[in-house]
Structure formats: C-alpha cells, structure tokens
Image (cartoon, rainbow, N blue to C red; front, side, top):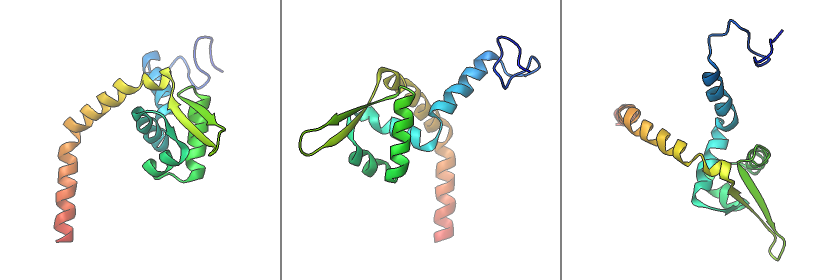
Length: 130
C-alpha cells in the first residue's frame, strides 16, 4: 500500500529520489521512438499529416496514434483546414516547443559520446562488407 506523498508504485524504501521519478515520468511521456521522431520533426514548424508521414516513414496507423497521444498530453496542436482540399495540420504547443533545448542537449551529448561508437560500428560494417 502506497503512503501519502508517494506514487502508487513507490514505497518508502525505494532508492529513487523524487527528482529521478520526474525524469522517469518525463521519459515515459516523450520517450517512445515514434513520439521522439514526430516531436523532433515538428521543430521545423507546422506540417500536414502526409508531410509527417513522408518525413518520419511511419505508417498511417502509427502516426495517427502517436499524434493523438501527443495531442492528448499537450505537446501537439491539431488544426483542420476544411476548405478544399481538406487537410489536417499539426504543430507544437508551447509545451512541445519547450523540448527544443532538450533535443539540443541530447544531440550534443550524442555528438560527444556516440560519435566514436558510430564510427567504430561503420568501420566494422565496411570491413564485413569488403
């Protein structure tokens, strides 16, 4: 049974601090592969559904589900243009835009820490192919 002030999945003996729980909660909201791809893609501005489908290579079903989830969580706005041709547009909300520095930080981290791993993996692949 959870005590007051603790989340249902936490007990007083959990080793995770409240700050760590905020990180975990954040990653649960944005951390899926498709959510990250769509959020990152929308940094360039408003896009139609088919533009997102092409740029992300997501299936219509997956993209639709991800956009619905992101809209429900407040990261994405949906705008319906009813004039001919009918089109649905998606853009980031201020909450979604607040992730820009997060993506920049992750990209910087990846450049520093994953560049060598990527180069090594590519070298191994080229040796295997050659």
